[in-house]
Image (tube, rainbow, N blue to C red; front, side):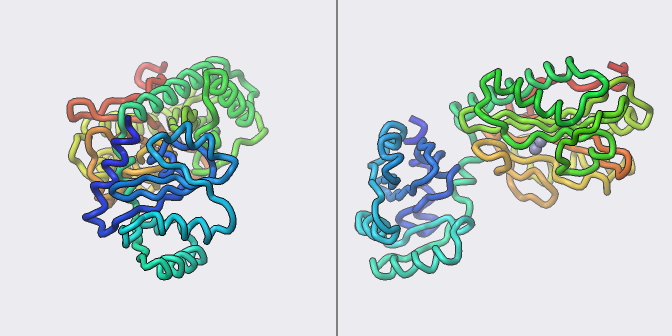
Length: 362
Ligand code: ZN
Ligand code: ZN
């Protein structure tokens, strides 16, 4: 049912974007629009028709997964079947394509083929990505499962941490715990960054034992049914010091304030400012170098952008992260990240993993 709705939504954009047909080849967009999970294929969608062209490895699977589509077997050179697809579009003259994903070489060839067929290629930027930013119920369910698996894996691993464990050990335990709970894969390579490593955004887990009392940034996520969870907790093995208590308190206040005050209808920029102002006032503005959040779904980073200067309007049905952080070179970092959605116009956290409470020392 949802594929039919998605086709309707895409078709509604065609007239305003000046296209009569849309060619979709970007993997997440293809999956979103058709339900087809294979690694190769193209969709050709007009006001009346929907065709899915794929090769012999996938034609049967495509038939099962995408009953809304007519399945076309791509055989022979790419230009041959592309010509056939163009011919089968009938009167549709202007063919929209995903300009962000097409190489210059492919584009050159397609312009020729379209010219021969009396069609015109029209660049489309992010049309399907924008539709994807508002989740339907099936997507929300998949995300909630991915988030639950992530939360449970975090608690299990956190509770079993002992002095002497390495970042790599922790990353492996997280992966194992997520897989055992039904994750199909990691949503992304886990970040387990202790002490000074925590100040580097893309640290890879090391073999050294984690120092007792050092902050450990754990940014982890399970993938379930194609959907990506994303959650960060900062913890310590053993007691933390006053520096940790101070920095953690600022980040947690920024995060809780943002979640409590982001409202439907705000822009990404306005939402970002709610957390950023608190961190700036505490004197750590330059040490919060990334954006407050991002949408999650079939991709780990998608619309809406919740960032400085982002004009994206946050609306009902969007599911996105809220993840302020402070990173101090030579000391480490604190980041706290939850996934949120709107309920009655206000943000509600879908992530349930416990956070340290520095006020009561737990
Ligand atoms: Zn993350
Ligand atoms: Zn994130």
